[in-house]
Image (cartoon, rainbow, N blue to C red):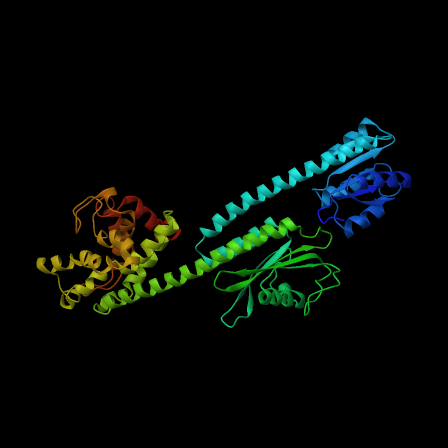
Length: 482
């Protein structure tokens, strides 16, 4: 028997018909199973997958129509040829509506049924190829989405969700290796979404085996021969698959998927698609982890810069952190994209970095500044740009740091640009910075009441500040919109 030999199941309560068809189809190169009843056919289908079913429509017990319904509900890709010695238009229409590939009346010519089987097999192959193409297109789209996701928790959730959907699984879990190489559950979803379920002995043993062997594992209900150390899967599951998650440099975890009892086992196509998805997702996960490490170090550097400035000016302690918080909330409300939001967030921390080059006597002066002293203060945006412009991961902040003291109507500093010429992020920063400064103690005055600060922002709309940004800020800050 060839490994690629197509399998046909012939079902008829007339044994002689089963024998004749079996002999004929064997000669045509098919491996043939026969069943004298619908019940016997179900036993064969549950024990061994077949490529096509030829069934009589009228049989005692489970009829051909019942068998057709079962196949279409559980093994949708298997074509079914219906035969009957008592043809009526109604039964033919019903069978075709239920998904039968074709309808044959007895007595039939063997060559006719041979041709129908051949066509059905070709059609099945085309459907499988279309399904594969569809899944590959979906896989391409999914991997693009995963590759563009920069938050690790969001990436993990998407990866598990897509894996469950693409494999038509009922549930799944995602495990990652911690610093001590112990597998820890990160996500669980589907019918069995409790993490405690996936801590059961069969899954723990299987996950460890996959992590150690670095190859996929398939376990089926009732499987007798298991790799050493593994335990049969729970009776509530039909099929379980586990994939290693690895990058070219290291192993990062395991993906587990399962189908509940009564479902078909996972197909080879399911295994191939999810194996490719797991490989691509592993690289995306590792890249996002590296990105987050870089971003965390980036943020630490920025915070250190901000603290260096605030160490010179006791009155501005916490100012940059507060400005950052306001800018982030405001940027989200205004609908900025994730990348732009990151810029205004870090610009909020670093907007006053140039004050590190301003004399402490000016920064901490209790009285009104002289015109000459104010001119010194006005240099801090340009000093800030000189500090950050040569740092590769800070260059993108330059326009925001440089222009956060420009006026919407013009006449601000350092360049006097106006309106839309001012970067949008700098306009957000301007409102956040002004509000935080007004509501904080300064060497020359006490903090202003919140409502007074709100009134000043309202008054300066269209002059110092972008009206749209002020309106959004006040909507956020005023309780109940008042």
